Image (cartoon, rainbow, N blue to C red; front, side, top):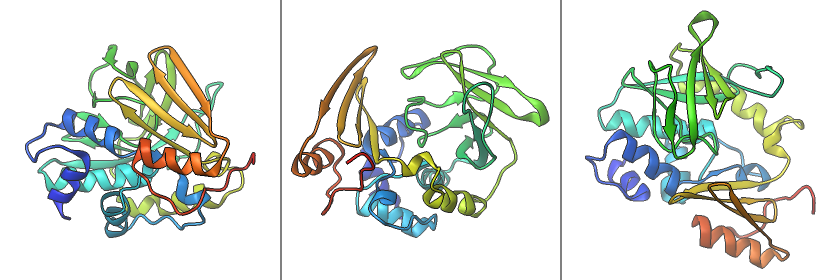
Length: 247
């Protein structure tokens, strides 16, 4: 991996701390599912991920972003376990294993740059009290089989297992998320990133800026305005508009 190019992409020096790296990544690299709506085939090959995120300055979803970030952290001397998660789907129900990929770094930190709205900084893995973060109040609780449940503002987000897995274990789930008609990633394109203390999101044709409890929405009626918003707010230059189910 060209570590220097990756660090330049997220705007930090080689001696950046883990919290600095985590925040910078979520500020510079958006969580997005545009490839699915552009007819692209998503790959978890590290070289292809590097080309997409660093060279072509795109983003990705959890398997891509956390998958690539793990390699960067390892190149910088961290130990990283890639762990499978079950995303909470409401009413106490968690989805299937491999629904999400998160990272345990240096055996002590839960790091996640690929969950969309989540923590700005790593969470202490052994802390069972409230952990305050710009993204909310987080708490980790123990579950059966050594699993850990992540809560934000009192609501469960996902349940992770502690077993380390290679990135290739997530290939079937990545394919399934791209192709299954019921996958929420196939419903409409979304692109979101941190912007200072705010979050900026483009969901279908709606540009959303969230600042604390304040939310401002702007509907982009034309394809030209939509493509311009991707470039202006996310640095993503597209030659066509991603498929929008509602249009």
